[in-house]
Image (cartoon, rainbow, N blue to C red; front, side):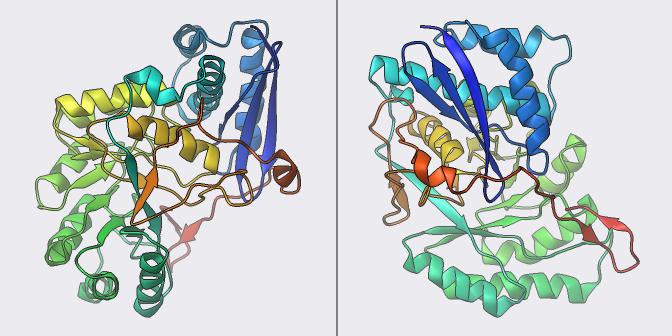
Length: 371
């Protein structure tokens, strides 16, 4: 079997789907994307195709090594995201060829259901609470919210009290049986993150995600050691090498590698194994489309230290059989490969030119804020 073509398509609202074709008729799907840089990643996939065309798609690790190490420059969001989507598609082909789900090739399932969470947002505490109740009604038993917009290096007590009020309203709305993740989105400096964490501890969040940017691991360590709330990070880290220092310094209790950014299915499984040796959990990052989610579910199914799976699309309008949430869980997929069948006719109606600008935040004085 040989790879004959790599076909990328820009899909609303902001995704890139990849379809890898073979000379035996088997195809594999992946999702290579960097939010706001769709065309750049698609171009990178095309360039990687120069090596892949004519290759056996089942030599997944060999091709990963050739594409990651063989080009001299390695790492970063664009190169590794393109590689991630390609790797997902190669696993999809291999699983279909063997007639088994991908997780069966990675040691087999260790669970029957995968816990998932959804996002709840809004401009006010009342709106966040309302969306939290709606999420519970839809079957979710865990939610995540970002409780603020732009944040200055130092904020006053009114800001802190406002954050606590918003999270408190969400806690009251969903009850203590529902977990709440808090995404700080890297918008907060370490000193302010420590203040916020202390004020939020009585509300028992499941985690604080990116309490500060991951570029300075020592800053994450400062926050992690200041609070009883588990710290999570990883959506902006790439490959196992990007997670090494975080684990060695115990800067986070929960890792959030993104299967469309961090290197793909096997690479995230390797990251999870590293985390397991450091008594850390993984909760894969996935604010993307249903192909990326399908790849995540394969890793979640076979990973002992898995915690909870992010998702924003269960595949309605994209997959012939979307995922279904019941009592906070999605069943482990049983079909071969990634376990999905893309509805290509429905996807064709959602194609666009790939133009999507990442939102930008601004401080009141007009300066740029971290998004």
